[in-house]
Amino acid sequence: MKLLQLLEQDCTLTPEQLASMADMSVEDVKAEIKRYEDEKIILGYKAIVDWDRTDREAVTALIEVKVTPQRGEGFDRVAERIYQYDEVESVYLMSGAFDLTVIISGRTLKEVAQFVGERLSTLEDVTGTATHFILHKYKEKHLIFEKQEKQPKEWIFS
Image 1: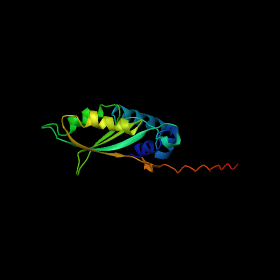
Image 2 (image 1 turned 120 degrees about the horizontal axis):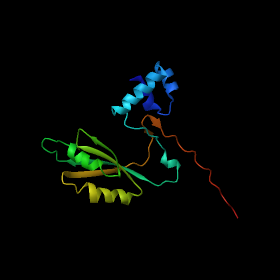
Image 3 (image 1 turned 30 degrees about the vertical axis):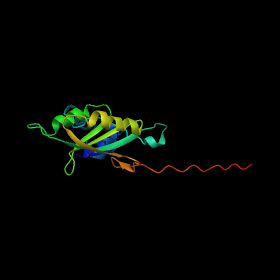
Image 4 (image 1 turned 45 degrees about the vertical axis):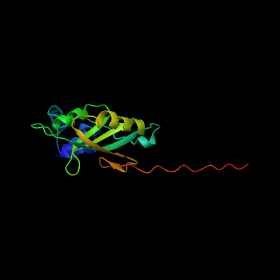
């Protein structure tokens, strides 16, 4: 578990660093990582990017989705259909007032709205949606998005 926790915190650590931190041999670290990957315990490695610090324009939305579960399959079939869309980043089964949370990204509000209106809400088993746009990220995957320093305003008097 220690090795997995270290990799989750920083997957760029070398096997030597991981071995030292987890009190393991380098060979054991490499073998465990290979096993984790083979058994699909580790699904991938990903950088967390603060896109607000770049020129890329993007909109992220959290969509609450109510669905009709299918006999014998529950929510799995509709969740699988939803996560096949390229726009969909994440899908979670929830408890409470709605069934699935779907996280999507698009270039504009209109693009996200079109996806919800034309593709997601028209699926046979979807009975309702509520879309919430993410306005600002403060923390993700235990990483804090630091405030950008405000650029001083330039005043020109003539």
